Length: 221
Picture 1 (cartoon, one colour):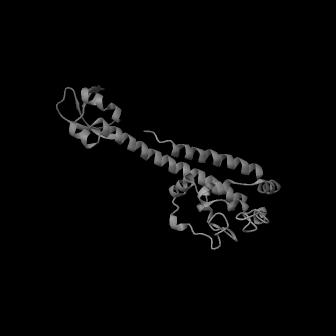
Picture 2 (tube, one colour):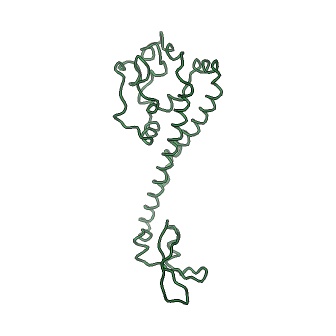
Picture 3 (cartoon, helix red, strand yellow):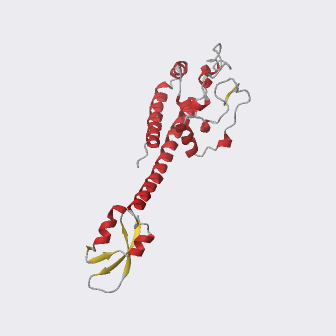
């Protein structure tokens, strides 16, 4: 944190303004003593410390430290969410559409068998869009009104599953949907020579999203 200090040479009465750095943990030492370095004596005005938020009751200083940590945590979460989503969207784009996804739901009981394709899309919307997924989407700029349900999704599992597949753009889908490849999908990727690269990308996605989940779950006091 940058702040201003009143600095003057020990043998010179003239005052000048200089820049310095300190944190909340240094406040007590600034109150008690004069710091001498390189022939300069540095003292801190009470009004300056108060205006910069470096003074006050211990509870207030602790609250400010917690708030600063919360801001840093939010910035970290946004970076991790963007990284995980960039990797997941890149995986989906590189693998492209798979033929097996068009018939995997055939003859299966509802809701998974509501359409011929998209068996894995027959899950619950709330489970697919868990709190971690929703916050990751929110942090990268996805808005609630951007999510449009499929017209015939009442008995198809996920509300975004339609006869032509998922109604959402790749940038709006949960990471779990973008990184999930069943055995039939893996066999098709292997036949196209894409399986090894896809597995490496999935590992990177899981690592990035795992870091996001851990950071989101852990909130220090």
